Image 1 (cartoon, one colour):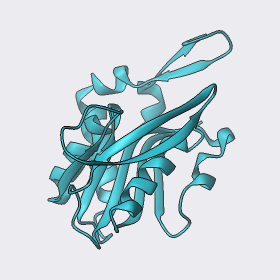
Image 2: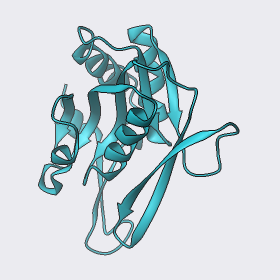
Image 3: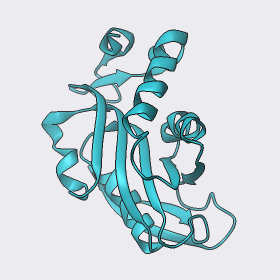
Image 4: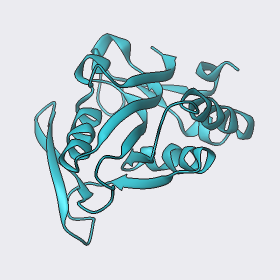
Length: 171
């Protein structure tokens, strides 16, 4: 299936000079959505995974059905102040400044093997921060699954080399 045909390009969003890859058109396409979830889940079917972790918010969209397909639990990684119990935190760089992600400290059993899922990998900052949260929980990231990879930004080079990295569409 040609997933690129289901992803809309929006020029000059969110600011001039940026070409935004909009997945809402993929999400609304029943066959494309099922294909995307099935393909990512199949890519990790033979990998020893205990949990699937997804980052707010589009990582939730893909992470939960992949966890379901793999028959594993799902753990959300959120922006600051959204989780009610004690959290691990990790900062990551933005174009201007930093941001932070959080995960419940008790979300993962120590020693667990974790698959991280998100819609896009660009610079790799969000995925790297998520890997740091998982390591703070004494767990190991065994894989990263992305729908889109913006290869020119080199995000995969920011991720742990021991982890399997899958992206369905590359730009």
